[in-house]
Image (cartoon, rainbow, N blue to C red; front, side, top):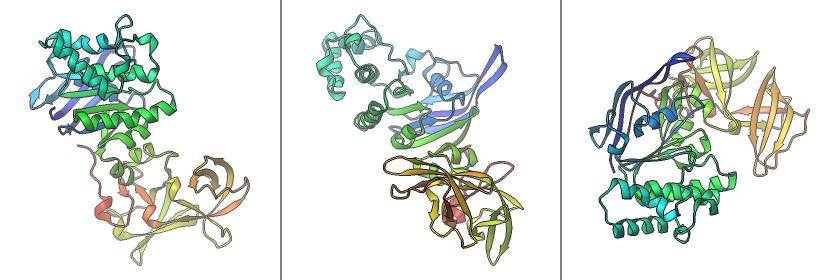
Length: 382
């Protein structure tokens, strides 16, 4: 096991049909020994390219990659002591599970045949696939193939474990089960792990910390709850959460009496204490409220904001209610007992604590969850 450090790592592709493309730009972050870091972001954000540079499958245009304090960016993949699991299982079809798992040990270590067999059997027991050791890939289910691919990587006892969307080929039920299994396995082996996914649910449930990328640039690295409640900018805020955060331009009045009044089309939405805001607000600010914090009230005649229900989606343990408010489309996540009908007009209640504010020019966070500006003052990624 070892600490993994990326410093100003950049990857530029040249000569393609799109000309020069900077896939990753000045990426810097440190993954401590034993941490499970999940790298997440939209398609094309550079997350898989980052993983491949760590593995040595892509060259680094600029910057350094260190594993255990040793620079490895110019080393061949086989010298980096990393193991990678790909989206495709890439198992040898003519080999048994035992042979697939032990193949790398045979060609990259000086272990004896007996030692290799013992290690394969130990990892097979950890993954609960010991009864499959004599089977071939064609006889395995998708989940079993994924365990074999994981076992082939784990058996090498690498310093760094890399996983590139390893669950994307599984159905929803099996994905949920394998998420739990991967966390259990990581807790047992304790290897420094970088896990790439486009699925924010995987990121939020599995990670010690999340690294969010957009356009090849690191936006924020933080524990899941911090990224969710205290995003560094509007992109992070809207990327995390399903349904996504409601965000729109709001008018600002004040501060008067120590509070800013925030309105849309002349309808006041909330009053936020000036002490909760990091800096001064202009005349317009980007206003955010998560669907679970948009409360539907019974009183639609009190002069406050109201919305007309356009669609109500029953989800079982919760409902998603889509509303029209002064020409805006808003989404509320409500308890299962709240089931308004299409066309109903309902009051909208917004707790100032749950209001997010973003700079309309830069997208930077001005206020996140809570009423303490010291908490709202989140730091952007270096």
